Image 1 (cartoon, rainbow, N blue to C red):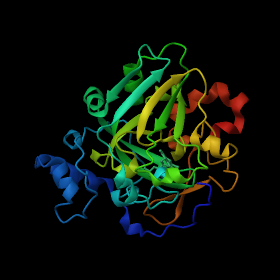
Image 2 (cartoon, rainbow, N blue to C red; image 1 turned 90 degrees about the vertical axis):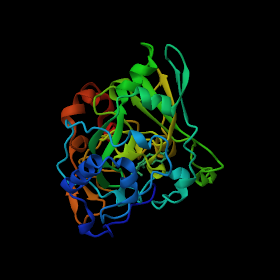
Image 3 (cartoon, protein in one colour; image 1 turned 30 degrees about the vertical axis):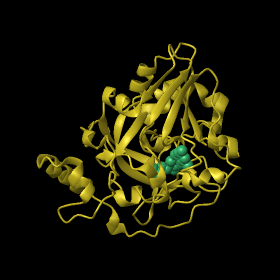
Amino acid sequence: MLLRVRKGWELPESAATDETVFRQRRELVKSMGLGSVLLAGGGMGLPALASTGGDPSAHLYPVKRNEKYTLDRDLTEEKYATTYNNFYEFGSHKKISAAAQELVIRPWTVKIDGAVEKELTVDIDTLLKQMPLEERLYRFRCVEAWAMAVPWSGFPFKALVDFAKPLGSAKYVQMETLADKKTMPGLKQFWYPWPYLEGLSIEEATNDLAFIATGIYGKPMPKQNGAPLRLAVPWKYGFKSIKSIVRFTFTEKRPISFWEKTQAREYGFWANVNPKVDHPRWSQATEQLLGQSGRVPTLLYNGYAEHVAHLYKDLEKSEGDRLFR
Ligand code: MTE
């Protein structure tokens, strides 16, 4: 992220999948009762898709779509969303999807600690059984000015906050990614402040839009996209959407995230999308859609202002442009 992203996109425009095609295919697969088996195999003459890699949660997907969240653009074709990634634990470049297959996702536990009624550690499959899984179509905007539109499966962050029972003193929730030297070669880059950390205010985490994603494209989350659970906060730059979370810590103190520690002038705590506030090294006015040619305008709060702008009204004076980087 410290390097300027290449200009232009090398993938052909024909690559983007129309949402209708995606939905028809999903419905057909469902009606045949073949679920993720067929999806993973890429049947019906459609391109082969990434396999679920034996994920024991595969039977949970696809989940019912929450129709409240609609898109004004085509979904990004799966092959782009799953092969053009940022996951610095596996390398500081975009082609980490093969390396990320080393990530061990079972057993996987999630620790909930800090300012909560009772600290606890929960196994991912136990957690998945208790959470209200649904699918949401969200836009995604990376701070590097590329963007995509993806169908996440998962549950509202609010459901996890309710499960965690934070104390009244908790003002923020800090999230932490697994840091496993054996499987994550990126951790050798000692100049980065591992583990990857991110945070939200409690108001943000309990906003309807904040989502913990556990799957994508009707299947469990691929490792490169942050299996088995990652954040999806579509009104913020993509670096806030922390992957492969092992810990949620409720705290009174505002967390200092991985990127803020690395380069505070460029990557702050709030990181809300705003086309009018440039990154110190590039414009944020437009974005490149993965798999398509040409750029499109970027929208305030990435098009989600009606859901989240109110969260920042009181902060406008004190934080100013810091709300947007
Ligand atoms: N989470 C961890 N643990 N490590 C990372 O390097 N990169 C972030 C975010 N979450 C990152 C992370 C950045 S910069 C982006 S743009 C998104 O993940 C990319 O998500 P994607 O690969 O699913 O598109």
